[in-house]
Amino acid sequence: MEPSQRPTHCTCGTLLADGARFCHRCGRPVFEDPHFAEADSTSAADEGSVPSLPSDFAPPPPSVSLEEPVYVGPPEPIDLRNRMVVRLAFFTAAMLFPLVLLPLPMALKSVLLVSGGFFAAWLYQRRTHSRLGYLNAFRLGWIAGLMLFLLVLGVYAVTFAVISFTGGNLLSQLTEAMQSSGAAALPEDQLKLVNEVFSDWTKLFVVMLVALFLLFLYFTALAGIGGAIAARFSRADGRAP
Picture 1 (cartoon, rainbow, N blue to C red):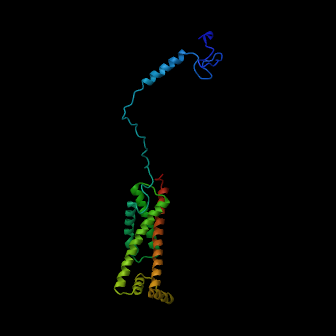
Picture 2 (cartoon, rainbow, N blue to C red):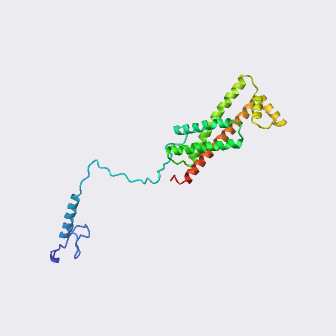
Picture 3 (cartoon, rainbow, N blue to C red):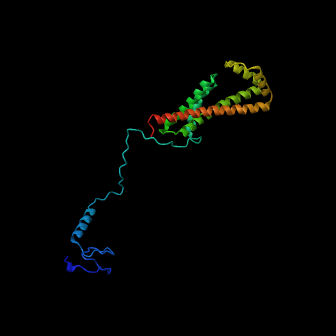
């Protein structure tokens, strides 16, 4: 378009600058450029030539590398409401139960408890293909120790009830059990203290509660430590993310 044919004002009333192609106020083109019109028609033709996809078309899923297994977190919380946790804990406790009742040294029983917690956590990770953190693994081992404690407590309760109802002497039974296990005889002063405790039901009840509490801590703590060790090994072997 020749300069003499260019409009001096835009349709919005703004005075146009010399050689302007667009209005600096509203952005409206001063005149139609044939090059722009051709480019717009070409773009519209290209857009119209894009084939339409079917309505039920779904993009392919992203590819997943199969070189390493994908590990996720535990599918359910590690507590007594998780059926798999309860089953594995009870299975572990049932295996350790006859060994714990044997007259074995305390150190060997401690190793058995740690191994039981380790086995429970390891088996859970293998069954669920998940990685347990230290806290969840300790909780799983703790539950296995709790199951074992309940089994042992049931045996002790039945034994105590049978001795009481049959008129037996609990102290003599305890002394015989210590002798059969190879434990050394108690000194005279300690034996006198034990006789005093067993002759008073109030003192006996308190002593039994303290002994059961310590036994509970012994079983659950060592089994929980074994579970945490299993989580440590699962982190170190490079299989878990």
